[in-house]
Image 1 (tube, rainbow, N blue to C red):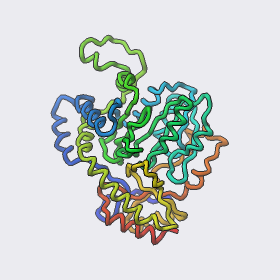
Image 2: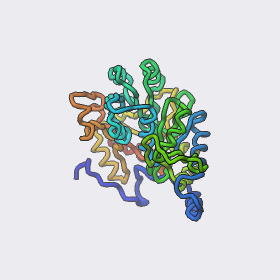
Image 3: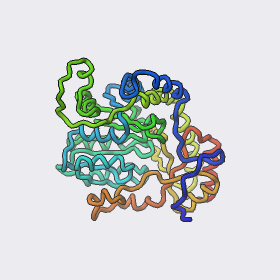
Image 4: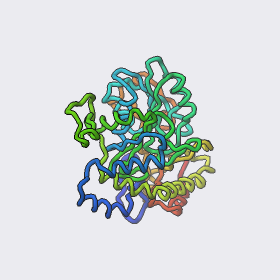
Amino acid sequence: MSFKDLPIMPDKKKGVLLFYPYVSKKSAVNIKKKLSGRWLGQGPMVDKFENDFKKKFAKNFSVIATGSGTDSLHLAYILAGLKKGDEIITTIFTCTATNIPMLYMGLKIKFADIDLDTMNISVASVKKLITKKTKAIVCVHYGGLPCDMDELKKISKKNKITLIEDAAHALGAKYKGKSVGSLSDFSTFSFQAIKHFTTGDGGILTIKNKKLEDKAKRIRWFGIDRKKKQQGIWKNDVHEVGFKYQMTDIAATMGCDSLKEFSFIHGHRKKIYNTYLNELSHNNRVRCIHDYDKKKEHGAWLFTICVNNKDYLQKKLRDHFIETNQVHFRNDRYSIFKSFVKGKKFPNMDYLENKYLVLPIHHKVSVKDARYISKLINKYAK
């Protein structure tokens, strides 16, 4: 069996899984109550989740709950006024969900290389890609480590283009003391199964310009103004193309329950993250993806290392029932993006492509587990 063909590890007591969904124990009871009530789809719990999220992460911003992080990204691109043929700069290294909505819209994608130390979008690469046709920059806070927001905001302001953050990894992260979600024009979050906590699936969009809130809510629901409709004054007309991108009250119930426990969720993940960092950072055969920038507070969604013998190390860890993987892959390898990368080079991505590996970090991983995993890495990394 090839090292690259390792199957998903079964959920057994022996071993440490790479991911495990976080669902509040309260949700089983609260969802049962919901199932016997009036609201199952988008209702008052969605409003509550939006308000709770706003208080915690995005004060003075509009907050829109959606069916997925991908929905939130697509909404952001629409609200940014992007049109078919517009140029948009994005990272080569992310979940395809960041970039696939650009294909829905017929945007001209310009892929930027990554930074070697953080695996975030390279500011130097972004600068080289800017043209008069550039309308937006999309950055991803890889693993929960904030991008160089000061530099990206300078570029955005200088060129009068929109800055959009894919913060699917970065719930709880901060930059210069401010929560990710309250930094730029648009930020998107994900509550898919393996994120900090899950709502089954779901997302959030935060919007700096509050004048766009009503439009966002219409587009989220087929282009219909639900508020006017429910007040009985709605006229049967739709002026803009909308989608079915709303969150359900069942999902929002899960979200509200987990938000109350987020201090525990994030605090535990940071303990595991810092254990790995302390145990591995002294090993010159292992490079931790962490830039030690005091302006940044890590969201602790992923802990990523780079080693020269990634496949061998992954196999040895699996022999000890430790599941690891690469999680995200470079987007230029996918056929759907081939027309945007012909003749383009990404030297930093090339260098790291076969070296990075993600370690388990979630509520079922203990500090003892993290020390044991680190001990194995220090033994087998070359």
